[in-house]
Amino acid sequence: MKIKLATWNINSVRLRLDQVLRFLEEEQPHILGLQEIKCQEEQFPFAPFREAGYEFIEVAGQKGYHGAATLSKLPMERLPTTFCPLGHARHVSTRVIAKGKDCDQDFEFHNFYIPAGGDVADPEINDKFQHKLDFLAAMNAYFSERFSKGDDQQVLVGDFNIAPHENDVWSHKQLLKVVSHTPLEVELLAKLQATHDFTDTARLLHDDTEKLYSWWSYRARDVMASNRGRRLDHIWVSPTLKSCVESQGKSGYKIHVPCRIWEKPSDHVPITQIMELRD
Figure 1 (tube, rainbow, N blue to C red):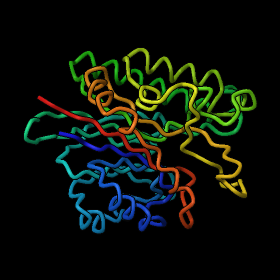
Figure 2: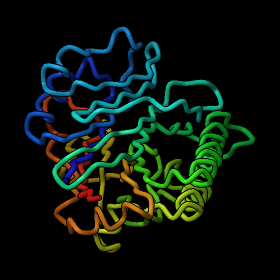
Figure 3: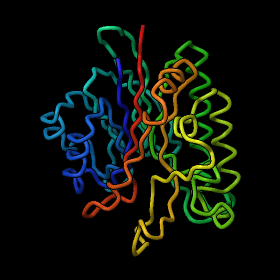
């Protein structure tokens, strides 16, 4: 059973509803994690997504800021999780029930919007940066508990607001002191990944020498010409699911760059990953 996973920081789901619906029609992912939906739960546009075939929807909303939502064609149930030390709506965790001809199993789908961290990479003078570090620590603690209980079928997606690899940014040297690529953030994200042996599917399937970006600033006059991007958006899988994505090869992972030049786009583009599950 092949499942297409997707993640997208949409930067207001109501403002860009037509774009999300277009993406869903064109790509037909089974599951989509949206971040920065910027609305409360009762304001979320459930009806259009259900009409598009996404019957199962879980939302964590917040007025004007943050927010995450997971849309699924497959049955899923919400997991009681808490990651954000400040109580922001920054994640939705679900258990997805995957059933097909050769498959009858479930996995957990964790949809994250990790704090951006402000402009100054110093937790002593920047509370937003400290918040980001605390959020990463909370994630690490949560997954330590999860794996200790034998829950080892894990998928993590979302806007991590960290570009970890030197080829995840347009200039490694120029961005070393810029929040999202500082050594401290990269080190903490690497610790989270290594502690639980998560696989970053982008770097599993694409050589480290390849430049990969999923975000481009609104400040750029000609986004694609300057191409000063960063890979802030990620799809990770736990060890038991590594072979499920590895078997799909390089074509199984895709950054949908053209979405960045759609009319009034998000500054992020969606990412998809195909994963094959078998009993």
